[in-house]
Length: 373
Length: 186
Image 1 (tube, helix red, strand yellow):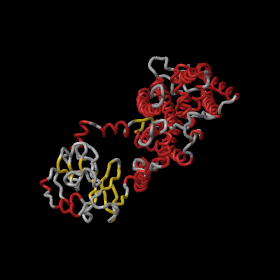
Image 2: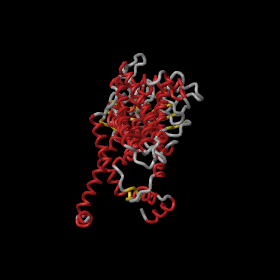
Image 3: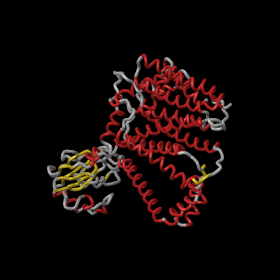
Image 4: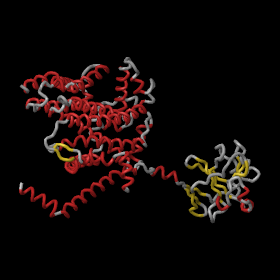
């Protein structure tokens, strides 16, 4: 590029200067941990999912009879279609692993506390959106399980139709439901873009409340090379899963086509939705499930105010231990949902859900108030 | 401290070749990995083998009797393959191109070496109706070519428009002669 073109562009759209200020020379604290690369990994994975999803959408047919067959066509006929689909499915697994880890990290370090409450809220909003997008993507496969799951969930939407608006119609695409998968596919794409917007807001909110660092280093080359290590490990794990476990955490029954006349024996969602699925079974009825799901998120959103400690203090040992127990509790909750319905499971599920709410509503305020004294 | 300073000198000044080499190696490995990842995305947008199989069909034309035509569907359009009689060839070679609504020479409408075969898209260039005239019993118009049942446009056996609302000669699809009796479309 000639100097004249350069100065013409710079005076109208200062891209180079912006890139230098925002990326190359951006001052960052000198002592960030490897986990600080999670934001980069999550954003990168989301963009990767958008790209692979865009390619898949060129062949996916969003209709009752077309969806399952079009996925078989992608797996068998489209050049590298099996690989792109594996990228998309495994990318979802990697994204949820990173998001759950980020949420856990924020909980255990107390990063949700004031003035970080909005950063925390945006993290949870992103998780909520990703759960919806992940669920819709699962439903788009129109397999033997996801077909019936969508049937149940759209009935949940129908349960909400007494509210203003008509959520059932938006999701079902009309009373007969023939447009359902088309609506699901539309929402799957739309919510992804909204989630990307939430990530951008999260980035700026985090910058606004970041404490002033004593010693800073420029992003490049310090954190580019630092993140390069994290990205390499992440990509290695990603590649291993893509090639050796492309269907990780999926219900094998869902590989069969949907049968509207046969309800599958085990209705397990993908692994990243298991704890949420368990929570929706906590209260009876469709509306009960919705209330329980949003209550589980509400206590998370309320964390900055449930924590009674001084925001500048280091979280105490007992609190950290409780967060670890909470993590195990959520994993165990997911395992009860994966195991299918039985009496012992129903009891365990109630215990684990009970512990979850006990942790947030009772233990957290008590322990944080005590430990900050 | 002294150790660190010595290390910096070794890395930064005394061993610049080593650092350059590592940098080039890392960047090239990254570029190769990026390219290898991008390739399946692009390749997935290429036509599938199933599509390629139907997009370049081979048509047997040896059995077409002179003065008759064959109709094959290709990419959703009717393709007309007409074998001309020596009389039709002579008549049309005598036509002066500048006297036509859409001037075209005989050689523009056929492949060299296979002057008796005319391959066209059988859709009128005015109103898109399918033309009549492949069989000698169809209404072929005064020039023994094709006519349009919708707007009455008249084409000669080479597919050149001679009269009627149609403004242009019939389109010629992409094709090649594999030998004297086979053509491949596309």
